[in-house]
Image 1: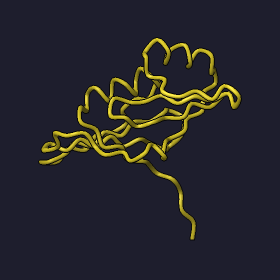
Image 2: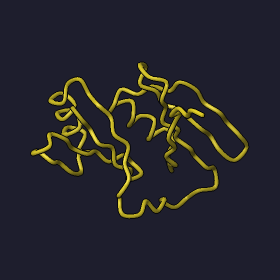
Image 3: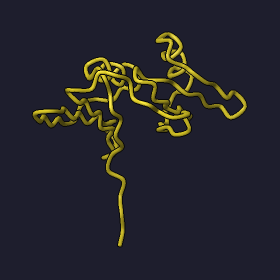
Length: 118
């Protein structure tokens, strides 16, 4: 048996705000959308791999999600860490930096952390 990564899910309160964040911060683009009576799923892709970020919006949800102690995250690699850092600094979304390791984290509108790697 063999398994392949397909997608990871983040639940969001404001779908359009989250889509805009991932487009601006990471250059991700919507690759497909599925709408149901009670939900909308938007899959964001990087244009290079088949892996997607599924943003799930639930129609009845009004309160923020409990993300625990931020001990989980999604990591992304960039080909220009300096340009990425400058963009994220301008956006005000950098939430943690580890200069010794050459990495940092950004936080999306719902509080999810994303690790940025060179």
